[in-house]
Length: 347
View 1 (cartoon, rainbow, N blue to C red):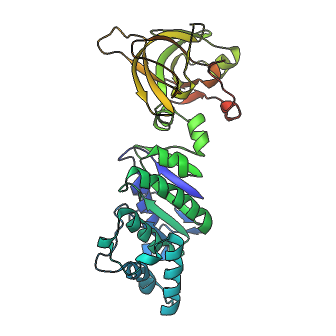
View 2: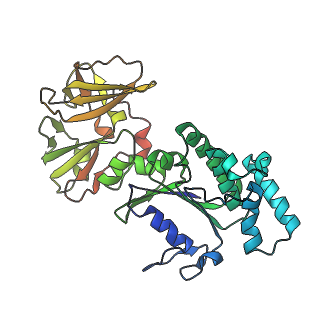
View 3: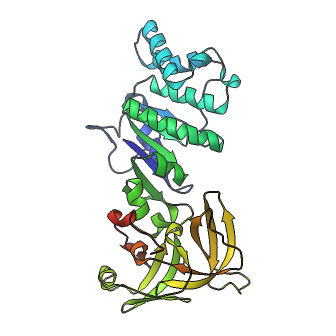
């Protein structure tokens, strides 16, 4: 399993990883590796390999020596077996030609492969990775994400991966755990966390651009906001219970720009257009005449012609709406995963 811990800076991701590794004291609860509780085990006895953000390679050693060092110090493996293991791992990582170089002679991507190779040679019960790609440029990070996924599937070893980058979390994890202020907010598959967030924090953190939010008041079967009123179906009303003070959420990809206003389509003005190539992020405002307009985002096709100052109707399909209790942030209504691929906001 590939589990990604994700959340904003300071939320407790690295501390959690360090507790698993035995570098921080656990004050409550259990850490289990398979059937074994390891709370009181020393780091050396936990059978865990850790990959750091800073690579942590010994600068005076060659790549071969860096990869051998852990096996020489922590196992009774014969030298010939260590040599074979290091060379096989180097071949797997594509760094066999770098074995006699020192870290100062390597690029950032090569150093990261060496750091990963040094962990792999130990054949641990679990890998811990603390933002291992954050020092790489954007293109190399994308390449290494794919390589890490392929590597984890090949090794079939449990991996706990820490990142603050929700794109990495969504693309790499079998499951993701979202933390905020030291508290676990949700654990689920990437699609579950994206389409069925447990609360407003998760909904706003996962996804780029972030989900749009509007404070609304439920009056019988309508949501009333400062700038619009939205009619709800009986099925949606039934999901809300007695809650009246709500936050309406809709993802930018679910906001459609249509020709005419209607019950779920409202007149807005285009404030800013961000061309992204295959898509455009269009910032819309109900109060465009204001000196500081309150904008929300629609993501439309890259070939759609939209210009600043243009008046358009923004449609929020009810099938794509999320509704949260405004006080607690708890999700009261999410769209069903089975319906996610069927939503066409233009219909």
